[in-house]
Image (cartoon, rainbow, N blue to C red; front, side):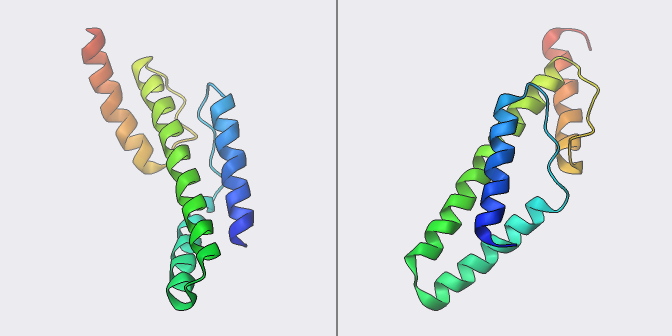
Length: 111
């Protein structure tokens, strides 16, 4: 899959996440493909010095950062409100969610 395809999929996911009060499911393998593409783009830029390659790299990094921020906000809200639907979370997000849920309960005085 080309960098532009991955960027497009990530942007679509980011828009969907921003528009949804729920946590959106990340398509299987998408984040891994994005990480692989980032490494490839970095390598190509080092070999060629082509600035358009680094611009693609920066665009991917930006959308990944924005997506991570949106998902983090949803996870915090879910933890604070003691949500139990965690199907759209990856393993790391679930671990963080469990910790946040415990802390949110303490903040709300119900633990």
